[in-house]
Length: 465
Image (cartoon, rainbow, N blue to C red; front, side, top):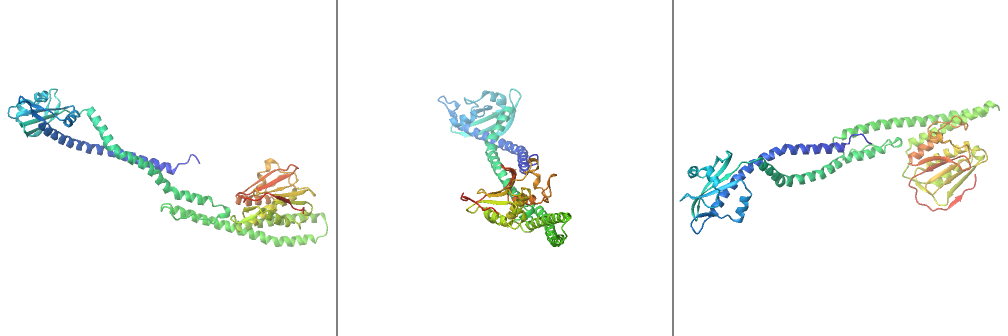
């Protein structure tokens, strides 16, 4: 059903939002500690460079000092383009070749001679504040002083640093976490909501004939248990109400049979008159109504055995045998066409007999005297009842199965309950009943039952009754 909020979608959206908020809230903390760590690491790195530059200083053939960095040191210096350095011979004050003369000019010769091992700050020729590092190292070539100058940290450097932190630090952690959350989150939500799906299937099985079913509380989250118990209590009250109504219907119909039998006996004892025939017809109609109410009450009081097996051929033969003693049946030919082998379907044989009996009774009432009523059992789990009456107009084919409905021009004297009983029985068997036109005039009522067993396909025609 569309337009309704999805609990799964809401949980996924809220978990995703929670993940995003937690990520955005943790980013400032991460970058703060990353910046603090970066400053400490950079200071340590500068101190290591001071030592490496001192080691890389050699005297040439003329005795002058020259900075000759190794390939590894050259790569480190190239990675810091804003870094400047000078190496000074402490004995002579001479600057080693390869040093940056601009750094000596910015610091000043006097200042550089007075500095001791330390970190310091100074302004370059452009007035920008830089950070300096100084170290006095004893080398094989004699004592030297190494000074480093590192320029300011601009916006481009900041962007490059943030990009490096995201790629090297954040992505290796966040990407697997995001993928794991995207996979585990929906699976966890689906498993958590599985009890609701199971309860929905159980609730879907509850119907008027199966009001005894209760929702299972086992393996249900503790938050849902109160709801399940409340629903079960409501179902119990509904079941009790249905049970009282079923007992009342069955008892009332049963109690009416005796007065009707007495009334019929007294009417039969009256002198032959036109009023006597009308009274007999009225009593017969009331008797049929009570009998059908008994059928309804019996089917509601006793749940159908839908898991049992029934032979449609045997059901048809048993039903037709019950019409042999009826005067209306003697005025027609009841013709049964059924396979030689059983047509086994799952269902309650007694209720299927009631359904077929009502269909045949309906055909007898509407068919002209002398014309046959055909009952055919088919291998696909269907049974058809064909009559030669007026048929059923298309606009009435849905309403004829409503209880107590009769068309305005109906003259058959029925009570409008027989076809409703048939429809209810077939529906509770998860089957289908349809009505169509007979080629020779009249109507064809077809009951189709699901999942019939596979049978042979030979047919035989029964002797007309």
